[in-house]
Length: 123
View: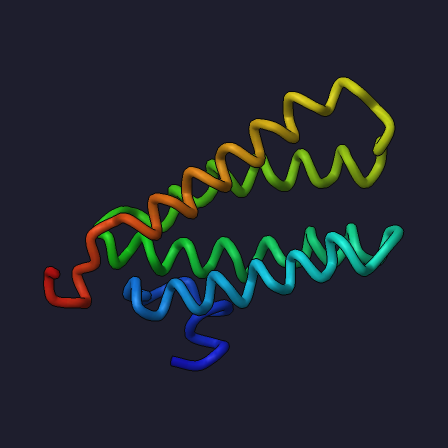
């Protein structure tokens, strides 16, 4: 599978065997921008990385047998938390939103990891 299929085109399916390496690649890029790129550049890059992450998860949800539109749940929360952090980084009122975004993203990642794949034979 190539980059465009995994991270750009939300139609189609991504089996667990392709999802895990793609997810690790995204998490490595996320870690790089989180810890090594400082300032607004790193924060903006993290917001931009939402698109390939949501596309990857939509494709995985299709493979599990669910609607890809479900990625809008963590996507909206992550986008809101990211924008609040970008424009009001010192505001303590955004902590619950950031926690909700982290929990929603982690839940969808785990769902993608443990969900039964329709593209692969059952183990």
